[in-house]
Length: 92
Image (cartoon, rainbow, N blue to C red; front, top):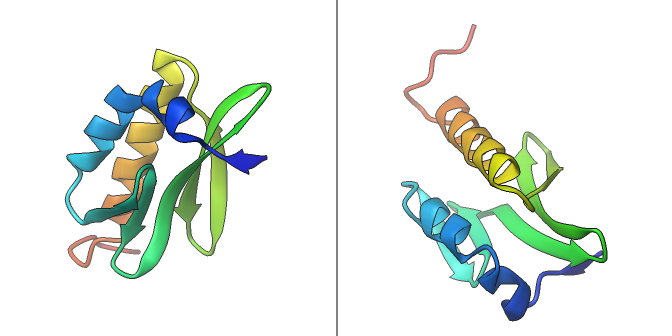
């Protein structure tokens, strides 16, 4: 699965705009987001569609982002991950 091209990322430009609104993320290159100095999120494409790799713990969680529902689910997962990794979060 190859990294998403500029043309592919244009198809999810609204999603990218929403991700850019999240505090603490830095888009180092189109569609490649870092949190602090670590890779946080990037996109891939293949014949079956567009996928996002979201860092969860020590690995990436691959998620499809081809429908509005899938995109909402990714945004929710991003928000959960940012909240869980926040210094203000309470871990039990």
